[in-house]
Image 1 (spheres, protein in one colour):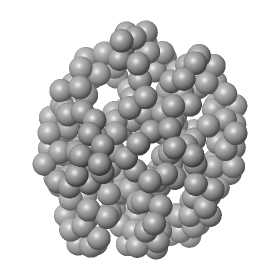
Image 2 (tube, rainbow, N blue to C red):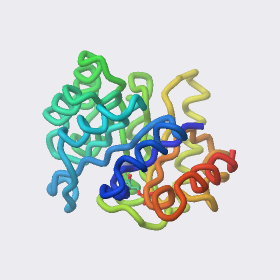
Image 3 (cartoon, rainbow, N blue to C red):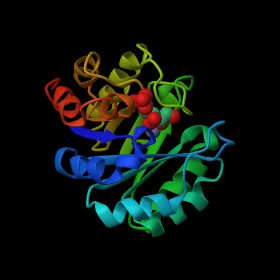
Length: 216
Ligand code: DX5
Ligand code: ZN
């Protein structure tokens, strides 16, 4: 399993201590990029990721919740991102998504497609043979600390089944409300990568990460 803590919930006053833990205990680091338009909230730009890059060799997993993912993909790529995931709902159109996936690949990064809770999972099936990551939202994007939407389990199962049936090799990742009480069921549904923000960063980070690890 891959654990991808969301630095949305990091305590920046303890940057050094927390990044050292991430470097030691997790595979990926998740960056929630929000532009105040695609979602009402606003987070950070590429300079922040660049600072992380100087302190970490982890896979930098960028989740773009922005209206202009092409521009942000380029900027975060220059800053040192390893993977760029954007929302299907920005375009609601397969050819436009395909173009951006190609663009991300041409920048030598992994490409991911993300889907909001209200969009039928079948909408992104035609993209699954092109992407490296499928990021299933288990909360409405925009804020950390929300409750996991149980119906996401069935959605994860559908995507995992499609993956198996077609012999595809993208990584199925889930994002929102993940904790030690639901991680087991999430992994059982076929999810391979867990994004976790508040659960990882609230309290003892090492213990929290270990608790997730034990859910496998
Ligand atoms: C929501 C973000 C999530 C979120 C996860 O828009 O994409 O990555 O920060 O945080 P928790 O784990 O607190 O739900
Ligand atoms: Zn995210």
